[in-house]
Length: 201
Picture 1 (tube, rainbow, N blue to C red):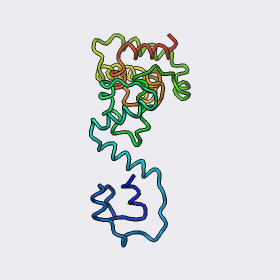
Picture 2 (picture 1 turned 90 degrees about the horizontal axis):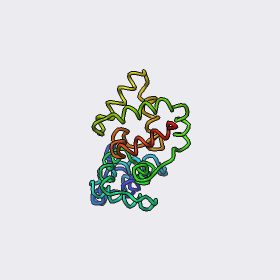
Picture 3 (picture 1 turned 60 degrees about the horizontal axis):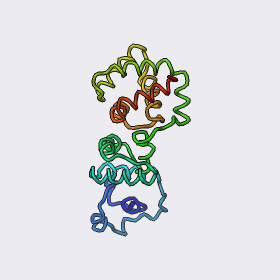
Picture 4 (picture 1 turned 45 degrees about the vertical axis):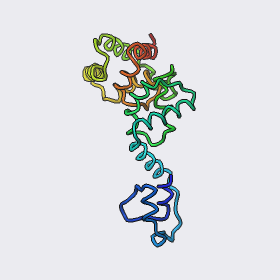
């Protein structure tokens, strides 16, 4: 926030965006303050915030996730959270996005409206997905991906049409951490149960 506010109507040069507080103290000069009114740009603020999230040390990021999830009433297992954190750290702009992205790992979830609409008419396909995944000897992101990509190729589906129904069934939403890693973290039993339930079994 300090970095963003400093850039409202002021710049050091035409290409430097990120400053520590010490750097701002060193470089700030009223002579470079624009006479034009500054405009508050929320998208730029969120972009800056995303940069600082990506730069955050892993332990601090996990602590922040745990605090945010707890404030939303989600009791997050620290081990699972630590495994999930790298999957979302590069994608987030706001820490407040965490409950929506990670709730499915710690609680039973019902598909939201968009996910529910997508799941209509997907019973046969999800049944086949569950059957093939259930046959896996190893439950890893790599083996899950191989099965789903093979089925996609057999049916001539785009990645979106092949994977989004599975995402909707497993996470309850159409926006989640990477699908194959999410399924591996969720575990075989809970993943298959959700896919079968969404497919009507």
